[in-house]
Image (cartoon, rainbow, N blue to C red; front, side, top):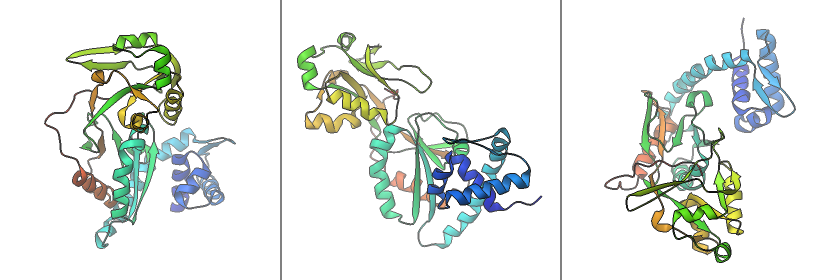
Length: 314
């Protein structure tokens, strides 16, 4: 049985993207051509590889098995072709990153913009999701997360600021009407804008001052999940609907403009910054190697000690 490599690549592209249109945007091949290639592959193999509906596309059990076997093989092929980059004056190719929403909004942009200016022949594709993912299965070269305790075959290197903070704030009008909290426990009498993990758990709000650590579960007038819903929560805080507890970097523009007022600042808790992580292969693809070297050279000076706290989604 012979199959075309292009048909296999089309199947992988569609399965990774979860649809023909999204795959077309990332692969540069039309959706109709991808559909034809997948149908041709299914006909050659005699088995359906994708469940297709008007809203989504997902691998069948057979498709999942094939995808599991193809991903390492395609990665090896890409690595083999990547050897040609050593003959170029500048690295070229595609770098695929998987990052959480907070990093995508505040940490990654300034680093990425400088990197793209220095390496114009490298194309960067970014997937934003907050859960921890298996990089090869997700089709990504590297990820960024806030916990350096990774799988044994992963290498982690610091990226971005090494110390960040959670900030607590509310609109001045809200504070005038409801009063300004003097202690974190006062938040139990306030409307709070909360977050919820993808698994359903609602993380607590943590505070620390002079060695005292408090973990609160304040009432939530609005509950959001990480991702684009963060904008809704920030907008609700600016509109005076309640108190928000979020990364300081995300709230800083609104604090500086006066749209939000900082509260309980002596209690804001520090946490260590994120890490870029990737599989410890002997030969890294040229785009990833260029990015790792760039991040290391771009790293800010390390503080004498880092906070041990890691962030919890809000």
